[in-house]
Length: 102
Image (cartoon, rainbow, N blue to C red; front, side, top):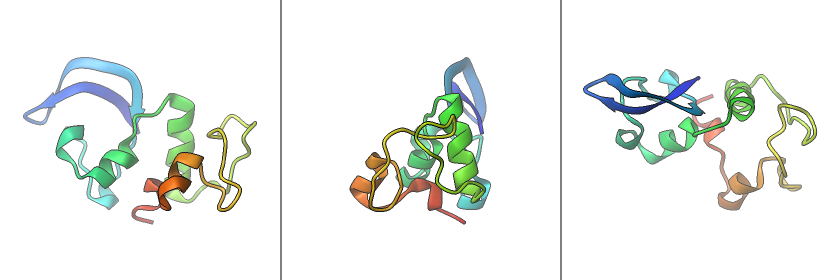
């Protein structure tokens, strides 16, 4: 997990950082020196952007460390789909980017 850079040019961060965070998983084929727009859509989806609390929860879920956090806990990610327990946006298309490479 890292703060999202404004942009990456020739493998270097330029322009500072945003207030958003992103997940980068080398095991899934992602590389921290490749800009967001240059990675495949599935890795873009995993990367985020996330707010800090959501990034930490997504990181734990991606590593398989968390079971289904409740909506009201700090690690909760909002309204969850009753059918499979994933956030509604993920339930809409049937898969989660967080399950990419476990």
